[in-house]
Image (cartoon, rainbow, N blue to C red; front, side, top):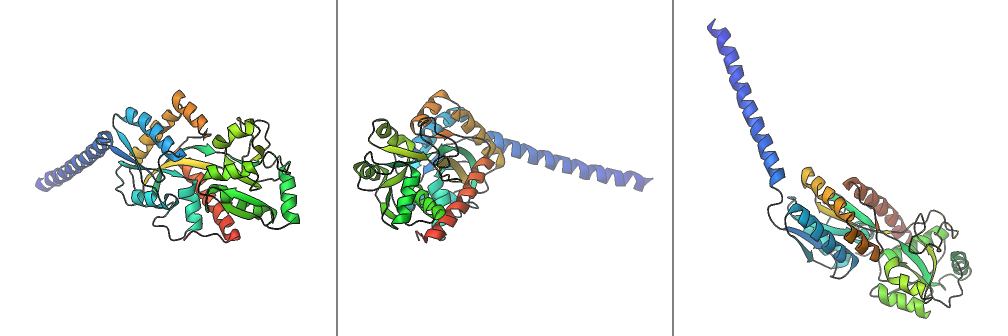
Length: 333
């Protein structure tokens, strides 16, 4: 009789302790989730102030900070095409208090061109949200003899290396876009790198360089004023701000897309609950009328969506730009 009563009592005691421990763990987890954020969040921009990634970061930080009832401080850590700031975030604690404003350059082209980066562009980070994409436009000067993309490709085939193209610097998305065209069409052209997009655009406008791929925002006023001609957009569909400009596919170059993207990452291992909260608030901010208007001025097509959307576009771009870099023998080690 004694033993029959004793065994259930020990089992009951064990179960009670287990339930208490489980409840305590759940309470701790719930507290950790609801307690965040309780201090300033640092948003690292791996580029200089004033660029697209920086402007976007400050706009989103203000809206999301208000929603989270905290301050999000934007800090610029430029250098090595985004690698310095990215490496800093990769080494940061995965506690939801450090974010990274990333782009095609830092998280798709850099790993394609430099196998010795101080971070793994995929494994060192947790995707939070994809902001949107920036279409590229193939432009020529107003007096260019190239009336369409087919004219340009034909000239490159007739005289290898005679056709020149500008970019805002070696290893940029604008250079890689032209390298993609070279790879697809089997032609040779001469790259003329500049220190920034603006001087490159100016020299195309002046006729010193034959063409370039450029983001929509800085070239739009010049196209409308007749100072530049847009031959095609490197997107799957036409761009609303340039409705009369054909896509590359419509211009005779099928399966050609070269868009920049902007997004935000956190260090690898950041708690899923925090990532989901950030993602929800960022998606909400992207639909804010003020944000939508500002992004429109930057030439950004809003995408948004779950974190997986950012992973999808990043991995696809790493594969594409790695193939192009290998074909062109381009490295930035």
